Amino acid sequence: MAKAKRKYVCQQCGSVAARWQGQCEDCGEWNSLIEEAPVTVFSARHDLATGGRAISLVGLDSDIALPERLPTGIAEFDRALGGGLVSGSATLIGGDPGIGKSTLLLQAAANVARSGRPVVYVSGEEAADQVRLRARRLGLGDAPVLLASATSVRDILTTLTTGTMPALVIIDSIQTMHSDVIDSAPGTVSQVRESAHELIRFAKGQGSALILVGHVTKDGSLAGPRVLEHMVDTVLAFEGERSHQYRILRAVKNRFGGTDEIGVFAMGELGLSEVANPSALFLTDRNEMVTGATVFPAMEGTRPVLVEIQALTVRIASGATPRRSVVGWDSGRLAMILAVLEARCGLSFSSCEVYLNVAGGYRLQDPAADLAVAGALISALTERSVPADAVILGEIALSGEIRPVAHGALRLREASKLGFSRAWVPASVGDPPPGLTLNGYGSLAALVDQMLGRG
Image 1 (tube, rainbow, N blue to C red):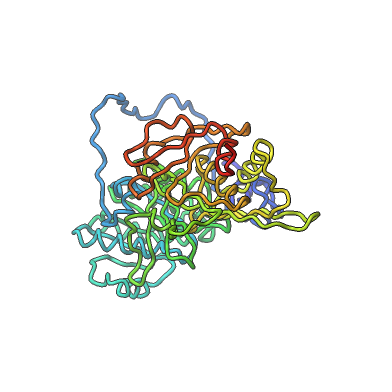
Image 2: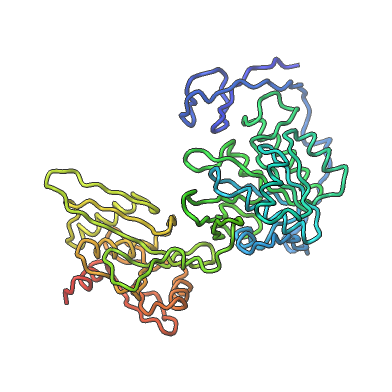
């Protein structure tokens, strides 16, 4: 028998060290290494090429039935999932405390249970009476959902296998689960990994849809080992500010559908309600001409969403360091746009503080927003407003060239449907939809010339 060795596991990134130290060498976190009991290892010499069980191999052209979808009764939730929950799949949903994860899952569980399918909701953070009280407050008290408050994975799996096999199992949350196979505290890397492995193996073996609720860190990423995201089939991120009404459910990973799909919800007295037209959330009243505001048709998966980009410039005294503040966009990309405007277009922002905001708490990652950001900055600096019936899209190169973007036709159709009549776009965007006039630009300097009235 090989001698057992001590090991220290980082609770943030899961790296293993041979001795304890104050700081993890991989992620840089302090006081995150915790000793875990070693597993007894029996050494044996044998040839791995023999003694195994032959596995069956199939071709790519084999006829395979599509997985069965389990609709949750919430269209926005099903959209983010790619059409509904898949039987035998594992879904991980994370978000800040109080954002509405438990509320959304309780509403989905009630809808599935009312459709005649057995549903089990296991809470490791709240008592069953607390979950029952929330259900009554949301008007779901009559839903035949089976509740339990437990943290032992062995007890949970024993209970699930003795009765009627549930179609949906919700575990809230995976960080509170405990497996007696591992000798460590709940929430540690090894406990989270082992507990999730046992629950996922049960779901795939029995054909039940499994939803795991995960905690998040200070920067909004899922807490626990990174391997947890690789073990599940779908990862959903619940975004939004607790002080704001609206929430966005974003698909980060999906083996049964497209990624970057979103579902939009509004938090009310009766829980989360669906938002049929997300573009209306992120657009303010544009009856009056306002400087520093542009509209950009963003793409979230297959859904175009129109958002408003707002910019403000403030003159400061000479010699002071200007401030650059960004909300909802990449600060590095803002610095690049400002540099192109100064170097290629002759506009000076060196004596101005620049503030950029994406309205409604929306977060943009699309490079096609470059031209809309530039238009807002030019409008704010020159105090010349952009027409209220115009949308702007295009990617800006360091040379000042405006490059075409993906899904241009789909973005423009959404803008035309919402009543916009003009679009400022790259020169090679294609034919416009009916009712929409295109203004094509080959360079950013051409847009500046138009907005400043230079020829």
